Image 1 (cartoon, one colour):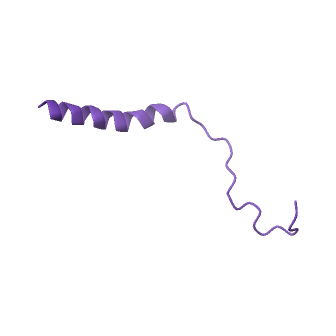
Image 2: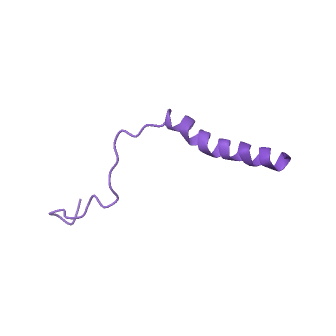
Image 3: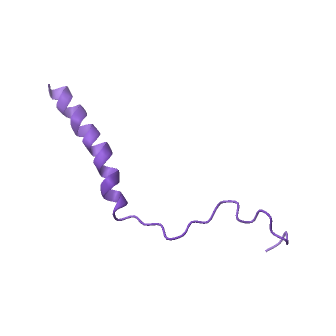
Length: 44
């Protein structure tokens, strides 16, 4: 029975934690890692 409660608490922590943190974390803009591909000049 104690093991069951430990597993329940673990799953609650795993599934509730991302929900709470997503409320405070916000991405305004994201650049792709290959933004330089297809540039006309090979130098910046």
